[in-house]
Image (cartoon, rainbow, N blue to C red; front, side):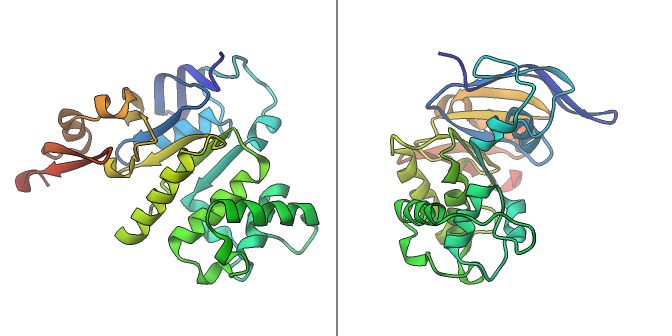
Length: 266
């Protein structure tokens, strides 16, 4: 079985500044990964290169075992949800309209020169929203939705093309603790569904890695610091080095990891 995505010696530079260096990593079908690391370590760039939104400046990226020159079809089967998308959504459009816009490759519906979603697209969007627990907000405008509800609507939008990979770039950014825990509980329930696509989730916070996200890729200064089963690679020593604090203990609770820092180190 070929990896969905495989990076071989991948590097990426902006001008003379290296962002990624010598990255080797693979995503196999059915796997769910977290991508962990401090600000500026290359997490988002890694995903953009892996998903074909940036070309590496060295090394190879294989998808399904092949080096592809035309990534149009590939991108249409990847669902990307990032914090930068939140400000681009028309505030008065409904959750249904926003979800349906994913079928035509837009973020919300535009009024000039657009191709409208079909009635079947709207039916599909409503079903996807109901499937992910958003049936009660189908007709609600974006501006009244909570941060957690907005992320779910963007996930519904991303799933309109039946993606084989879903990428969540810091999905809990801006959420209060209650909203974050409700969103993560919902995400865990989605991962238990055999129809769920593979997941890549970028986060700064170890405790956001739910039990269903069994693998973690740790980035540090543009290189892979560790990769493998979450409970094995996420250690006190690693977190202390990554974040420059003294992590005295990692508490394991209900399949999640909670780092405890010393007062002197935080």
